[in-house]
Image 1 (tube, rainbow, N blue to C red):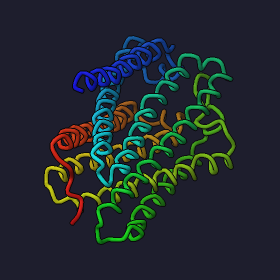
Image 2: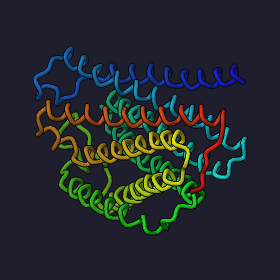
Image 3: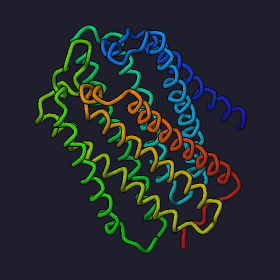
Length: 321
């Protein structure tokens, strides 16, 4: 069994290493953007800057994928031991896997656009494809996370009704959508690139932005926040402290990942033209903070997943208060 598990782990590592190679090659092969002259940096300085962003971002992939490996093993063990809430953990594992797929795939498409974006048709295709994949995949992921967390919350028999927890998620989502919509419709390059060598944010008309971007994002954020609230509810139903601590780490990591996803969508909504009016130093600070938040989230998920994987080998959670 141990040999089989180690073999499976190295398959996960192999996928990450392959993604590292492709992403690094695409990123470093991209020609300098026309906006590089505006920030007064040489090509060498830009390449160094790319590496400083590249390395921590790709390390986050490794942490995320290994965390998913441990959680998927844990979810399989709950099914093998016939734990009543094993279906909930299975759905959480699927949702986590979809989030990590999005984490790796979308930057690949963005890097491809930077390489072949000189062709306008390719630039439009890759932009639209990247945008919609970054909407559809998280929507499916958070759907899985919501279903899984709901099954856990119901299985815990906690006193608070599920419907009473919808209000905080609804209010938070409304605030996020309000801010996001203002940013989108103040973005003058949302449909057409502001200048040669840049990319528009969406390349689609406003009614499609509302129907296929803003509304699905609202549903996604609502599902994600509700999943976090359901997971918190499940935590209160656990009596054994070691199990509770492990799920708390997973819960905190999930919150950080949801927050980083919201931040990323918010940054993208402003568009390249408005972002260029901000100092390079401030943009880099925001990007590094995003990477740090995302890395912390997946580190906590990995920590919780490893603890759960270890605990399930020696016992089962006491799920009822």
